[in-house]
Image (cartoon, rainbow, N blue to C red; front, side, top):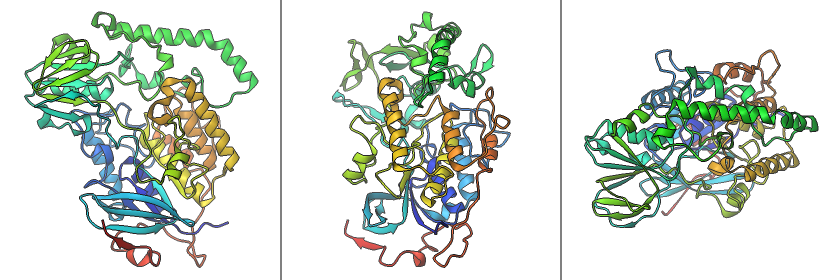
Length: 516
């Protein structure tokens, strides 16, 4: 059956929103992007000083647009922002975007979706009908801020609010053991004469960009590495026997990795040895080492403290261990809430997120109980740009009924339950609402490509090399082509809508204004 042109709402203008808009547009669908901020780029639009990607640029890129050769292996925040802005211009997505526009409600209306949106600053709400919706709000849109008793006279910021001015010359406490926490602590130490206090609840394994001189991507990202870790995919009897046989080798492999990191990074003398096993935490919460972090600790420009903030005082914080730290700025690098967007109706939200807090999405994209809607960018990874693009391609074909392996409801429910059962037993896998695919980048990418109908063979896939966006783009190009038609059955060229050009094409009575 030939698919017909759809009107698609893309909610979010970051990496995943651009990937979704480009994918739908490439098949001839009409696209409207809703972005609540004043520009495209998502979390990369405004970043804290000195930030750079954890992943090498060949992983953190779209398949059709490698980074320029002049960009370093780990692109900076400015590099990523420029890359995404150029991508939006190249694919003519700017005109399809409604900036400073917030989606307030999303409700089913027969076979369509009624999207209620309005200015972020307030004002009249607009109701519009769409044939399909792509949720591209990502995993980093709702800052998590702990509640602390007491009164503090200084500035209290989330990591997403940190700027050059908020660090310069300040007396700073940074709370959080994540990559953003160590990034901001080091960045602050370069901008103030005061020692920066870095507070974490526990010590975690941090991966150096080079391990014994070898680039980490060649050790941790190859396909062969994935077979060492128990996975959420069902195994045959032979597979379980093989895993049992190699279990001692796997244990030795990860113990050697722990030993190497401990010695190379001087964790023992710095009092930073984690109590967890690295094999149990290989997921999205395994951060890279911030450049200059250990050097800053040794120099005393960053001072490590363990615990949490127990209470505020007007010019200090008191930690759970009783230590009082004078400061005028507190930065919480404490992550993001992983809850379904507030604009969902309760029935849809309950279908998407289980009572255990885990998202119930087939391929991390669609729910069998919520039709005409999918998520792009819900497959958190160290290759977010690449995996967002592939999930966008998957969603377009799924909604058009053009997947080579179009799943049934039973297929989806079985896959969802397999994934959920595995994640319940593995604490690290429950992070981000169970939406982290690391360390199984290849396994996840292979699934999406095979569903799309791409031709994967032992000759065009590698067991020893890390994922590469351009190489995976060649596999993506081998998926069967198809066309979308208008109501008269005529093939459509790619289309992008804008507020100017799409008004006449909107469905009758689709847009109504209601009081705010």
